[in-house]
Image (cartoon, rainbow, N blue to C red):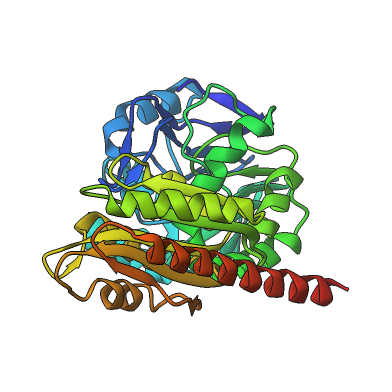
Length: 400
C-alpha cells in the first residue's frame, strides 16, 4: 500500500490484503481487508502505531523508508493479535532503540505470543500521554473491544482516534477516507456482527470514552477512515442498542425435503402476517450474512432434520456460533423433523441458552409434514406475531 498523509506529519503506512477470503481461518472476508499502521512525527520524537500482518512486513519497512524513518522512539501496540502486532519482533530488531508502548495486559500477551522482552515495553494506563513534540498521544484503555487488552490511541492536536478494531471493516479499498458510506456500511455491519456483537456492553463503554473527546477523524485498524465520524458513530449507536426489528431469521438445513417444506410454509405464513423473514440455507449461506441479520432479528427459528439422535451438524454449528455472538434477539424456536426420535430440540435450545431470549414452543414432527403439522406451523406464526406486537408496543411506550 502506498504511503498516504492523513494530516500534517501523520501517515498511513499499512498494507492492503486484496485477496484475503478467510480471516483467522474463521471469518469470511469476501472483499479482502487492510492492516492499517500509522506514523506520527513530532518535532522531537516519532511513533509508529501498530504494525501489520507478518506476511506484509516487507511492505511496512519500505513505507517507513519512503517517509525517511531511520529510527523510531515508540511503537504503540493497541492490540496483541497477529494482524496488529505480528511484525513487531522484526521491527524491534530493526529499531533497537524503540520502546514498545502497551497496556499491562497487552505487554503480557506480547510476551506470550511474540516473545517480546518485558523490558522493551513501557506500560501505560488509561489517560496516560506521551509528548512527541507538538503531537500528544493519549491512550484509552478499552478492554474487551474485542480482546481483554485492547487500547485506542488519540492524537490530541489533530483530533485523530486510532481506534484499533473498533469501527473497523474488513474491506480492501484504495480509498483512504469513506466517501460513499452506502458501499462501506454493509462491510462495517458484518464486521460488527462477527467481531464486536458479543461485547456490546464493552463497546458502549468505549464509545462513551470517544464521546468525551473531540474526534475529527476515526482511523480504525481495518478498512477506510472516517473524516465524518458521525457516519460510523450513528450506526454503532443503533447496533449496540437493544432495539430489534419485526424480523425472523430462519437458518435451516434439509436432507430429504421435510424440513425444507416446513421452512417454506412458515416463511409464507410469516410474510402473510406482515413479518419480514430471512431464510438461509446453511449448506450454501455465508455465516457472515447470517451474523448481520442477527443484529436486527427479533426472533431466530432454527430448522433442522434429525441426524441419528440429534440436530444436523450444520444446524448445531450455526446454533453454537449464534450463541457465541450473543445477539440481542428476544425469541428463539426450533422446527424440524425426525424419523424415530432424538434430542434435537433440547440440544439446540441448550446450545442457545446463553442468549437472553424466550423459547417459543417448537414444531418438531415425524416425517413429511401433514395437514396437522401445517396447522402447528400456522400457530407458531401466530405466536411470533403476538410476541413481536408486544415487543414493539413496549418499545414504543419506552420511547414515549
